[in-house]
Image 1 (tube, rainbow, N blue to C red):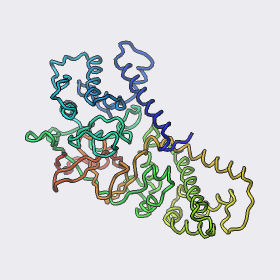
Image 2 (image 1 turned 180 degrees about the horizontal axis):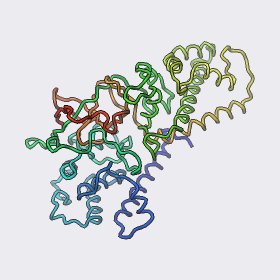
Image 3 (image 1 turned 90 degrees about the vertical axis):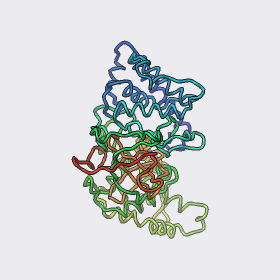
Image 4 (image 1 turned 180 degrees about the vertical axis):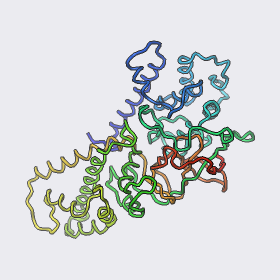
Length: 451
């Protein structure tokens, strides 16, 4: 099986599994008796470290745990969560009017989402929920609700990337980039004159100054040049963590997680190395064997390829981790399948060539399930402040990345109207800034307005 993003059958299977797991979780939560399954669920963190202390926090747990649920109308999905919430807590709607379902014809889906978001933020005192918001990740078939403030999630389950705050094992280190403990004077403030505005305290991490190839470009089309160019433009040692820039890159690609641990286990380094080598081999073969180049000299085409990928050789020369393959190593691999550097004929049986390529392909597939989960529909970016991160694949140079007080993950923002107003583009993983490393006691926070 190929783990490529364009494998529609696999993606729908994965989507179905996600929905099934979410449905089973809801059944377990509402069950009245203990079970081994319930014990397992208790090992999972559905709220990025928040404690259950009221209907708002439990509803937040349901939103993240059952994110993949689909309803014909968005408000039906939210009200289904309300029903599960009632079964879990037994709370009285009369005492919590903000959580009371409203099916009147005058109530819009946008109004329901606004009410839900405001109620959860006010009760939990955190901004966990807005990590699901933003303009990025939608397509023409499943557009975002309009008009809806960019900081309000519309609970669209068919957005492209998996949320960073999706359920994870409690033993994994939870994200806390903006500080989970909000000082009373720094709590988010809803603008009394305009319900579409939310005032928050934030610190700017930097502006996007370069982007690499998206995961689709790398995995499906074997495109790596933009990634090599971006990495070559950065210092060889990544200042926030002291790692080599190539080591930092593959960890950013996977949000430094292996589905069970943070940081990701070191054995994924070898998986990434095999994957990268296979992609480069395929890139060379595609250029040499393409229809447009069949009348060209294959040796000249290989020379042209390595000249065009000079950044790869520069990175390999200065890479002590040996993750980036050198030109000599790529040429050695090509010899094994009958493509010598000097152009002389080497007879390699077709079966041997096929078997060798299949082996390299199989080894590369060890990395792809992790990348398909963590990197799909994303691209790695660099900030002018020296940070490396990953965000939506449609991310553009010039967008800014911020830490928000009370928000576990950084957010990508787009300035509107000049000055202090911003729209949320989406969440971001920033290597070396996910656990509060970039904040300190007494530092200055800016107050900005999300619209």
